[in-house]
Each structure stands twice: as C-alpha cells, then as structure tokens.
Amino acid sequence: MSELHELSLKELAKALQNKTVSARETSEHFLARAKAHASLIAASNPFEQGSRGAQDASCGAFVSFNEAYTLKQADLSDQRIAKGQARALEGVPIAHKDIFVTKDFPTTAGSKMLEGYCSPFDASVVTQLEDAGMVNMGKLNCDEFAMGSSNENSAWGAVKNPWDTSRVAGGSSGGSAAAVALGLCPAATGTDTGGSIRQPASFCGITGIKPTYGRASRYGMIAYASSLDQAGPMAKSAEDCAMLLSAMCGPDPERDSTSLDTPKEDFTRSLGDDIKGLRIGIPKEFFSDGLHAEVRQAVELALKELVALGAQLVPIELPKTELSIPVYYILAPAEASSNLSRFDGVKFGFRAKEFKDLDEMYRKTRTEGFGQEVKKRIMIGTYVLSHGYYDAYYLQAQKIRRMIANDFQEAFKRCDVIAGPVTPQVAWKIGEQNTDPLANYLADIFTLPASLAGLPAMSVPCGFGAANMPVGLQMIGNYLKESQLLNVAHQFQLATDWHQRALGESQ
Ligand code: GLN
Image 1 (tube, rainbow, N blue to C red):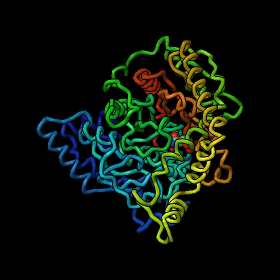
Image 2: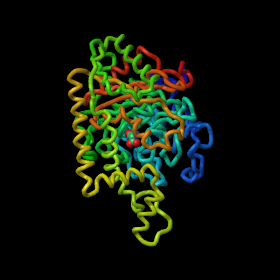
Image 3: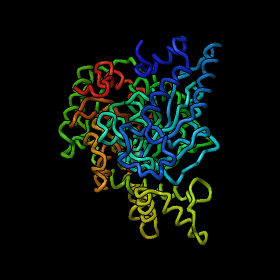
Image 4: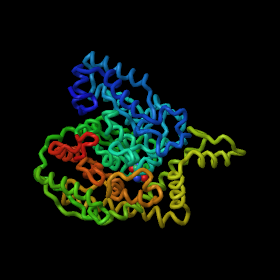
C-alpha cells in the first residue's frame, strides 16, 4: 500500500473502514509529519519572535496542535468503526484554518490581537466535519483576519511555498494550501472572501473550492467581510473536495442568517458525468495583457484538454472585471472596519499593559494588537463609511457589485461554466511585493469577480509556470452548481496528472 499521505480521501476512508489501518495510526502518522515541519510552534512566544523570514527550512503551516484531543477523537473513531457505525469520513484527519473557532485548540486568526484566545464553542463547519467522522488535527496559519494574498500578514510569520521555500504560499489560506501540498494533513479548510482558497491552492498546486455564498455556515468563522466570506475545502483533488464539501455545507438558519435554505447535498453525485457538449465561457478580460505568458500558456493547454474531452469554448465578456478591484477594496474594508470593532481589549485576547484611562486602553490595545495591513484596512473602511463619503464610495461600490453579478448572469445564458486563470502570475518571492501594496491588490483581479457575485469557483492544478511554480485553472459555476463544477474538474483530473505531481516533479 502507498504511504497514508499519498492516498486519496476515498482510499483513506476505505482503508479506515476496512480496518487496514486504524484511525489512531492515521492521526499519529499525520501528526508526526506535521510536527516535523512545524517551525513556529516550539517557540515560547511566537508573536515576539519577529518570525518574518523565518528561522528554518520548514514551511510554518501549522500554528497549534492538541495531540491528546486528536488521539482521543481518533480512538472514538476506531470504536465506531469496530461497532460498524462508521460515518462517511470516519477517522480521516483534517486541519482547520486558524480563523474557524475551536474549543479544543486556541484560535488566533493570525493576529496578536487574539493571543491566548480559546473559544467556548466550535464553528459550525468544524462541527459538521466532526459529525462526518473527521478528526481535528490542528490549526493552520493564515493572513491576519484573512486579509492578504501571500500569508505574509500573519503574526506567526509567512508560510513558505513547499515548491520553493523562498516564495509565498499565497493567502490568506496559505497554511492550509502548504499543509495539503506537503501531505501534512489529507485535507484542510480554508475561507475565501476575495480569493483566499483559490489563490493559495493555485500557488501550491492543490485543489480548492469556494461554494456559492451561503452554502457553508459562517457561524464561528471569524468575520472579515461578512457579505463575501465563505468556507470551503482544500485538498489534493476535485473528488476529495466534493466529499469534504458534502460534509461541510448545509443550512444553519438559527446561527447564520445568510445561510441558504438548501438541503445538504451529495456533491459527488455528478462525478462521472461526461462533459461532451459542455459550454465553457472564456472571458476575454481574463486573458488581458497583465497575464504572465507562462500562466496563459498553461491555462490555454488546459482548455485544449477540456475541448479534447468534448467541451466547447464560447467567447464571453465580463466587462467590469477591472472594476472588481476598487469595488472589493471599498466593500471588504468597510465591512472589516465594522467587524473588527469588537476587538477592544475587553472581550477577547490581547489587552495593552499600560494605560491611564479607558480611551487609552482601547487605543493602545488596537495599536499594538493589530498588524499594519489590518490597521490600513480599518482606516480605509472607516473613511469610506464616514459621513459625506458613504454615497460616493460605499453606495457606488454596491451598485457596481450588482452590475458585476448581472454580467455573470448574462454570460451564463451562453455557457455552463466559465474558465480562466486564478491569478496573473505564479507565487512570488517572500518580501517581493511588500513594498508595493497595490501589487498585492492587483493580483486578486481574477478571483474577486466571482466573490463579489457570490458564485462558486475553484482552482485546479493545470501546469507549471515561471520558475517551475504551479499554475491553477479557475473555473466558475452558476449559483448552486457546485456538483457540475466539481465534475468538470474531476474529468480534467482523470485526463491529466498535474494534481498528482509530487513536490519537485514539475517537468
Ligand atoms: N487577497 C484578498 C484580500 O486581501 C482576499 C482575501 C480573502 O479572500 N480572505 O482581501
């Protein structure tokens, strides 16, 4: 048998149910791998380490473990398996982006502000995955409060890209992408507000899907921009993602008012449908001059492959693609400035040590607790919402957001799915874009439109670009069409082996 970390989720679940391997052995195997790679955990106070440009060659993906809890859960899975009561993913380990609150692990959202914070409850997504039998093996690094595209905005330090440790893993779910790529966990959760599942998945050569807004409950997912935030799985293949998504989605009306009233679904049900006659929309704006040549080449070859499988390409237009950047970078900070007002030194985590009165306590706590990028966005958000500017910025952005969503609906009259690149370039060098904040924002151009429209979208490995770094093919589906989207990706993965390349095997 292959090593446990080389198995697909389906194979691993089967091996567990057949008792070829026990849940305890499985958890021990992945914990040992993850611990061997974890650089920052051992530090007594990682937040004081100045860990940027980190100390050793490991990737810095994991930020906390609770081995006793993980192994206890694994033992419970073994007992269920012994009694013939195994659930779909019984005993399969999963690690969570550190933005999902968990009662048995600390939750920091990559911020000093939540230093030492432990939630009294679990996020709905965490509970749902546990209800499917999954074993929680730890928490994963991310950009502070999910703000970023490179995981460099984390108080824990940057996550390094497993394909080239001098490069970023992408963000904000960089820890999740790196951990899956390295086989430190068979699957991970991520969140995507403007691309944070798709972009790190593409940078690290793994598969990730952001479902339709409202599919997965946001309860217990620390809020960045509530009208955009959505949870999703990150794993080695579309099939793995389909299994995970089936477990993690479902209505949660009492705890998330934006949760959709659609019953739980089996997203694996269409895997296997053939894609003859499928119309794939190709937005011309996604192939503009800013797209790096090697990325374009990999994406175009992937589209050829889909044509060979029977799909047809339909030219479409998404004319407001460029506007999605200013629109997003008004709306997301506006919502963030409101959501982050709760971190005041009273209720959660960090509080400044010295202050003379309440005002100073708030000011110092927020000055010392938040990182640069978060403070920048709180200021932008406060400005765009302020009296006299609201109509000019926030309201205007909301109107264009609607037009962006309408453009997609126009396009979906002529095609079934939309395809293009995830990002204009491959993973850049750590530190390279820090001096130019706009460069980071511009790199989000292809992921923001689907987020603003609330559409399901995924990243699928489709080749290698500059410096032999992975490239992702983005596919966007219409509302609630995750099954179809996952099947197109699955068919592509049956015909190609990009998603199976081991680290270093880019040729
Ligand atoms: N890069 C985008 C941002 O910085 C998206 C982040 C996300 O999806 N959480 O806001």
